[in-house]
Length: 348
Image (tube, rainbow, N blue to C red; front, side):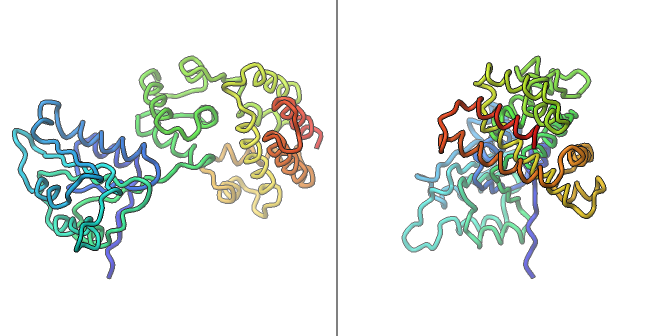
């Protein structure tokens, strides 16, 4: 019977390492380099003091690494330290040596019985590690963990990650603040986490609020895509056009492509809500994939302002605007297109 692989998240692993609990082997693999780089740096920073690193930190790189030498280093005991840390960076570049199917397979014997005082970190970027003997041995012996560093998608995946990371810092973050960060920073994970780290230190009551973000990151709490969505959901034309005017005068921080994408996601979910059989907040949460009851109620409220035919037309307007903003069949200024889109939505 196959041994089931442990599933871990970045937040959980980050918390575990910071607490000083280490696995013997870490396989950090996948397409998002930030999580891989951050975890291997955190392991080094937490397991070894700066003085201890001269004797107890060994770094190898995939394009020059000899796996047998790496394993030999792993079997050495630490000097004046509890741990020895061995890191293989860019492991995806390890080449097959003559006579071997895959040099990474050689790690299988070590994974069966790793040295307790050694922390081995394999950083495999861009894809999953293909060595079945190695991963099978690791799972069977329960000697380590495999972390999949997946690209974070815009939308609810990104927002969920923001909430989880804020919580891991001991902070709460409300829906509007989450949306402001997702909208303004997007999937630049390094910058996003850096800003959250800063906000967590500035939040005296451990609440990350829109006002705190406005004061320390420079995102307007009143003029952003979240507020534009709110204005359109209530057919508040005055507020909607004020926000678009603000965007036009602050184009660097308010590209129209982001606005159109966010509105497309919002009205798509409103259309799903309008046609749903189960219109309870819980039913809508399940349907659109949100954990926020407040968000589900917002979709429900919007269906009272827009009927199904209007929503279908709005989706069409959004697709047209997206195409024209890319210069296809239109030479209009992007903010003129956004104003036209807002007018069409309000009158749909």
